[in-house]
Image (cartoon, rainbow, N blue to C red; front, side, top):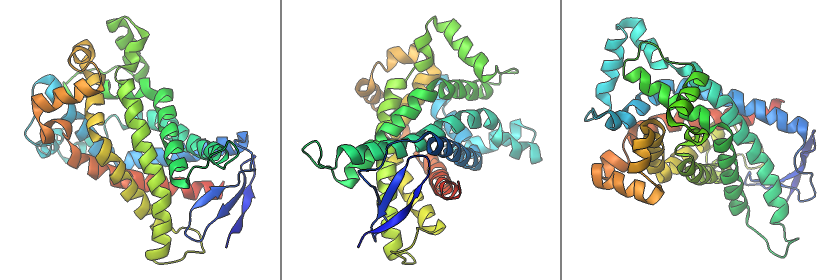
Length: 333
């Protein structure tokens, strides 16, 4: 039987929860609500900052490893970079701290990115529930609604914050090249604009990122909600209660793995376009030709899935932390 959950303030409307843990918006509920939207933006941003700081060492090694081919000095495996980063920083505690170098810049980008992504996902879920409830002559399953909503949230977040992501990748590459002085995030964006002579240079690789963002976030958010219901029924069963932190953590980890496994080649191509400038645009002119060129030049494992094992080390804790923490922060706001 259906049971009513308490309505949240700010126009989110009433929600109905099924025994399996899936939450479906009441079609009569109001879409949006400025107060609720602001709370979700802050909750998503804070969750993202914590998660990004946790996985900062893996992310730094991954960016260096994925872009090394651009410099023509690609190592055989990413593990050799661990010792190099420590040695170049002087060893000891300085070597450990070096893995968080540039994390403040990454956090500046993550707060708006994940804040927008998680807040807009909730908004799109409400809109999809209204559009797919039969009032327009057709019905859409909850799984499809969550996939479309998650995909829309991913694209919204990419378009909102893409220049910050591009600047972060350029700054990481400058650090790896041994630059004594690295410009600020805003200085890097200005430098890219001056060097390439067009505002659209700040969106190099954005088309690929939009495709990847739609697919990754669609899969991630849809599978996260389904997995929470499965965990409630089979992992420390409690189908009538709220998902526990363990249910959320396990669901987030597996949702992230599924999403990243399917779209990882797009992430490799995106990094090449962000850091390779005009030469990379000529080499990888569009998604299909770019992926084919990667495969022909570098192969399946060392090209299309370059750094994938590193990405798994990053994705599981990252997705686990920010999805679970977002849920918990939402409940307390």
